[in-house]
Image 1 (cartoon, one colour):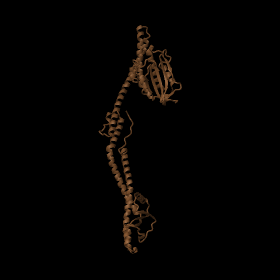
Image 2 (tube, helix red, strand yellow; image 1 turned 60 degrees about the vertical axis):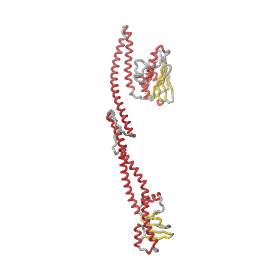
Image 3 (tube, one colour; image 1 turned 90 degrees about the vertical axis):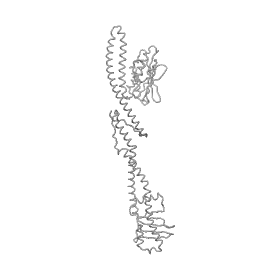
Image 4 (cartoon, one colour; image 1 turned 45 degrees about the vertical axis):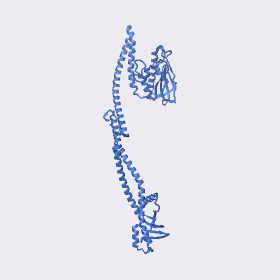
Length: 476
């Protein structure tokens, strides 16, 4: 048995790489969520440090009555340590200013008020600084060391932005390293617990599909008690069943081929014997005349048995070819082949409407009808005078889900043995020497059309119902 299968993906192109990528992405997403408050806190600490220098300068201003009397070197050193252009100290409505010897005129000024320390404000300020272009001047506003005091620093924003960029690079590097290490650790754990067992299952399924008759490729389940262990044991059971069924199918196929050849040769032999028996029957010998009918009947039965076996093997392997078919003429043709039309003692009634058209395989459905009508005729002929006014009829019963073709006779009915084995090949025959293949073939044809055939128990006679779904109706 050959089967086309997909190639197994490499270790890092299937679940493995997807797992690593997913874990890394989740970790990086978490790091981004943590990064924003961390960056805001970094900026707030940086600004607080500059404010502390401003507070020191404010103390100097507060201690000196005349700011103009301060040495220029001292003020410049104080401003340089703070990295500011100017420091303003406000107290009780009065302001004092320390600025560089060469004052700087800022072009764009952005205010950072450290008195507002809620998290959204800090995050928005950090993003504004990080995404801002060069050349802006930062005005830092914060409380002094005394009540009712305030300190302001005027400084370039570039140093703050550069420190924030350096901090961001460090955070990104640490986050990437953490994501890779965490993903690798989780991958190794998941690979041992899940990916490797799943890969083992996949490799086994691909290998078993290539050669399902090879019993050595049946997976050996592990002792795991979780879902993967259950999957391994179920897969092993399924592969064992498939292996067994394929072996049985091969044996049956070989046996069926041999039986078909033997049956074909036997049928040819019986046909030759039948021709000889027909010639013998023409002799005038009384003994020959008495034995010849029995010989002809026996040969006919043997030929019919051989033909039934061949038909059974042929019919079960041919799918129906659906086409719009008028059912009433099909019934008339089946009745003619079953020797019911113009029968000398059995009346036949075809109650199928002329307008009924079904999308069926006319040849296969005709075979079902032929079998049912032939069985009814043979049952009535075997009953002989026991049945008054023997009759066979076929009628239409419309239902919500489809239609039913009902074939009935008023004969003696089916014996208990036949009822118990209906539709079973070689078991369901109602007459001695029958094969029971006719009803078995009829059942398979009905099921192939999406319908079913069933025996309806009734007080008198025999009735079979052939149900066909409404999907086969051409004119609904």
